Amino acid sequence: MIEFQDVSMAYPNGTEALDRVSLRIEDGEFVFIVGRSGAGKTTLTKLLLREERITSGRLTVNNFRLDRMPARKIPYLRRTMGVVFQDFRLFKNKTVYENVAFAMRVVGEKVSVIRKRVPYFLNLAELTDKADRFPDELSGGEQQRVAFARALANNPQIIIADEPTGNVDPEMSRDILNLLVRINKLGKTVIVVTHDWDLVNYYKKRVITLENGKIVSDRVGINVEHVEQYEAPYVQHSRDTDSEKTENNGGVAE
Image (cartoon, rainbow, N blue to C red; front, side, top):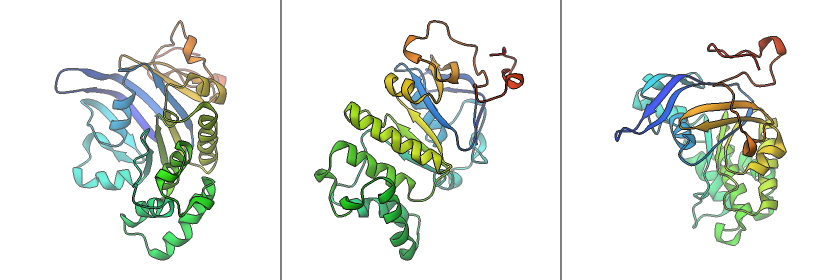
């Protein structure tokens, strides 16, 4: 579970990246985070990874209190999350198999476990026949799937995909999102940061829209490209029952 409670974050130069954000993501949810450049999306993901610290408020991720977490516990937090970046960040001198296995080796996993689990994740990502290839021998979409397999290798509770379709064509974008849906069905929480409005609209998942560091919309299936009037910050999304569709922090019924 992820919970932002009245979280603000300002950079040393005075830029206020997030402004009193309250947000709850339950275990097993699939959530899109959208917004214009500078809206606060990148800062939000950095806070989840404790690459940045909040200025005020309370932030809880997988039972870790990030607002008061000592630095020595950060590696344990990050082991509960798998992150996929737009630029893939694969090792060019390692095969597909070795790239996925590396994520397990760095946390001290047994060789016997690695040999068992790597083929499973390669199969999930439809890469079994590419195990011995190097990244430069793969298409952009295949490289992205390797990145997903590696992110899953240590069985994280949360998968964060930062612009996962930014470097692939539209057809491959749909394949990548379908993979994320399959990952979500395994019980993983999936958070996708994206500018791809077409994909957001197609999948009709929960969509959280940021603007100027604030949540301006939080609902399911919204056409974010054509929003003209934003909702009040943090309205319970439509998965809740009608009687529960009231904002947690003094908001309005949906």
